[in-house]
Length: 168
Image (cartoon, rainbow, N blue to C red; front, side, top):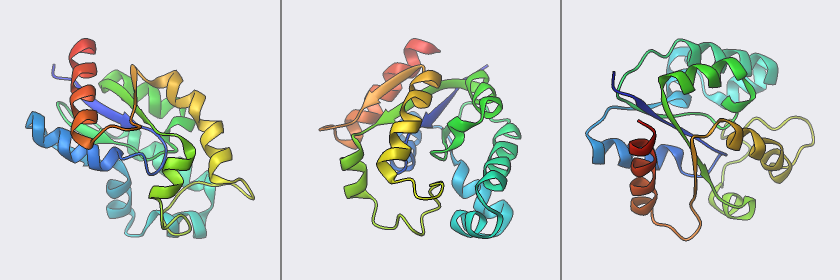
């Protein structure tokens, strides 16, 4: 069975961008779970968070992740997927999990639409507090972590492909 390449990491790290480039380089289909959820629900992630709340959003995200049955795909996940042990166990069973990482300050400089992007930020939690909370979860689930500081997208793609080869 061919294994998937699953990208995890914080919002703004480049999971979708790297995922598309990786899929193209390896001639694999690409799936972005955030887009999948939005299309299936018929509303933006931010609208789900605003109307249903964080617990409901996480339940929706988990349900769609658990329904994934792909083979030989590149899958970019939402940044909050690591809160669900069930979802992450399912993803790990499907392939190589690669965490992309950048320092919080770099992420903040990339994200212009934090209030409308669909980022799960409970209460008065800052983006960097959320990053600090999730960082150990990304490391826990990752087969490898790519530190993207100073790297081009193409360099990150190459490193992710190498990680996948080593873990296939």
